Amino acid sequence: MSDGLGPRCFLPPDWEGSGRAWGFAAHLYALRSERNWGMGDFTDLRDFARLAKHLGADLVGINPLHALHWLDPEAASPYSPTSRRFLNPFYIDVEAVPEFALDPPSLAGLLATLTDDLERARASPRVEYALVGRCKRLALEALYAAFEARANGERRREFAAFCAAAGPALERFARYEALNERYARDGGRTRGWLTWPQSYRDPRGSAVSRFARRERARIDFYKYLQFVAHEQLAAVAADAQSAGLYLDMAVGVDANSADVWSDREAYLLDRTVGAPPDPLGPLGQNWGLAPFDPVALEAGGGRTFAALLHDATRFAAALRIDHVMSLLRLFQIPLGSDAAHGEYVAYPFELLLGLTAEASNAARCVIVGEDLGTVPDGFRERMESAAILSYRLLLFERDGGGNFHAPPAYPKLALATATTHDLPTLPGWVLGRDLDVRAAFGELDAAALAAARALRRLDATRLLEAVQAAGELSHDEVETLHGRIDAGERDAGAYAPLVAAAYRFLAQSPARIVLVQLDDALGEIDQVNLPGTYGEYPNWRRKARIRLDDIACDESIARLAAGVRARVRGG
Image 1 (cartoon, rainbow, N blue to C red):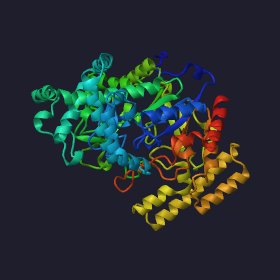
Image 2 (tube, one colour; image 1 turned 180 degrees about the horizontal axis):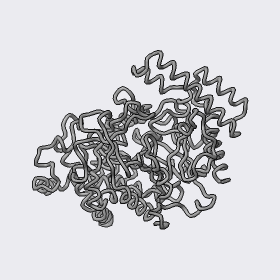
Image 3 (cartoon, rainbow, N blue to C red; image 1 turned 30 degrees about the vertical axis):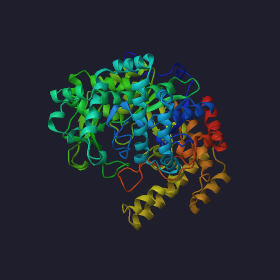
Image 4 (tube, one colour; image 1 turned 180 degrees about the vertical axis):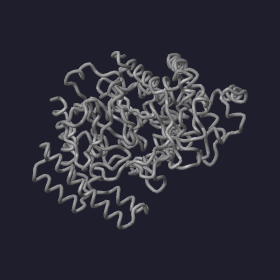
């Protein structure tokens, strides 16, 4: 829709008055339960969304659900997918698939052989992606065999309808997966179309067409995985007992990916996406993602981007667009270079903004733009006029002297939360846990660490003072928290008063959405991702400290939720 001044995204009608929303955010893979296979799945998402709604929440936010590398589950970053249009099959709840009931003896026998592996995967404090991936691949292969042999006519018609609706994009994606299976090496670590024989690198080539005729059953298997994954996610989105889904769309895809192979003319392959130096990355960042070609994007009327938005908003009550400045410009780095050699490249902003508003209104989906880092002058004002919510983090909302903004200073058209996946948890931040980890990796020497810790301690004091000034912490509570910080206490409940007060503080703001990070609510100390690290830090692997059933019974989380809910509902 448009107000005459330009396109505007969907906003709930009650937001014109005092209406607001709040919710929880978590990493789906990190959710623990008695029944999952060692990583969170779509049934855990449903249970988490039901728990959130029981606590009065409107939304549950999760990491991107994009398809990752089926043969290499250890490549686990949800922000470096092989496709942003399709889903990660490892989130399928195997035992909830209808085909699980079609061949009980065979599947019971398979489960018996996996019992020890599944127990080990569930018990691990980290997601054992290789182990979970092996178990799920075996089970999903068996489920597809059961579908092929025993599915009734109605079930087959549902599958055919899904494939028809998904169209050529699904066919190309499934062909990519089947080809990748054929030509991947080293257990899947050497994979992707850039490693294949030349004749298979063109999705429209005769070699690919012959392969598709010869390997139809295998291609249909990969379509079946998407059918089941979409079926389970759709069920969560439609569940009346669940809070709405706040989904996340990554800024790009791996160059050696299904999306790039399927639509190669839409991407630039001689450069990668990154960021110039900023507080999150003093040396700049190279994300290793292939950017859209802005010339091709504009020439095609934004077709590729429109299709991506359609898929991203399909099941979402709200959608976070990672690095939303990419609608206007992207920092691009020549292939093989570092961020020092990068430059900004302009994109057809008005076209992309219009397509975003169109998709938002069609799906009645609120759009949140992640606008952290280097933001062009005037960009946030343009976001506001287009009804795109700004993404505001408590840890960053400060004045020039380093003091934290009071709640009234937050913009109305914003999502407010304390921290995010690339930053320390709130308990970890006040303790300076991230500084200690970086020092252990040699990024800070003794003098730099001491200076950074002193500044962090000052910042923690500033935060406590700001929250106290807003009436959310008493003098005695502040003194107790100072003592715990100075003593370096790491007990999970030690900082619960600060976490609850910080989110009540945010809920005092006029921000339309307040999002409670589950990691903060659980008192997690270690952050889930440490930017700039790879094998030296267990990125995207830490599980939640306790199971979902225990979260549902946790009185401190119930109190936190009640405090945020009361302030949000009170306007």
